[in-house]
Image 1 (cartoon, helix red, strand yellow):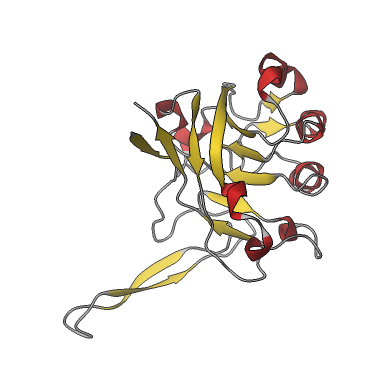
Image 2: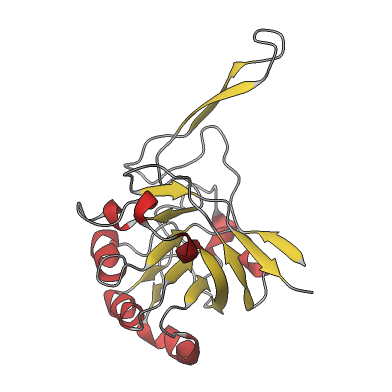
Length: 210
């Protein structure tokens, strides 16, 4: 069995989505001052590699603690759809993978954008799902849609409503190291159990059987 880390490390001062809280990771005490090391962390609930709860865009949508744990674990299919900066992901891009888009499926697509994480343009020039593509995927009743881009697309408000809300599809954003993962693996990506909240950073992992 092999484990592949699909999460970007969290570091002090790391970039965030423009309107989100900034990430702060600072020492609070150490073995000399308190006799143990402890860190103070302040960040938004959608920092780095993370997932969205329905409550992120719907006041009466499911919060993290209301989402079944099995939504965050299970077999996943990786779709490799290389895209350049600001390029669109259309319905046509997903048609070759239609046989994988089954009810309950965990689908992850790799554009290659994860390699630009940490760059100034990561949150501005990313490839973008079209609304037609988002509605097409949602209509397939998949369980999860993962991606290496920071949000489904430039029309992020509309796209989250197209994907997240109608069928309660889990959205996982800013995945890392997808080029190291095979086309099929077991996905693990449990959120922290923030009661009543809208999203959480995750330690996403691909489990690959030898």
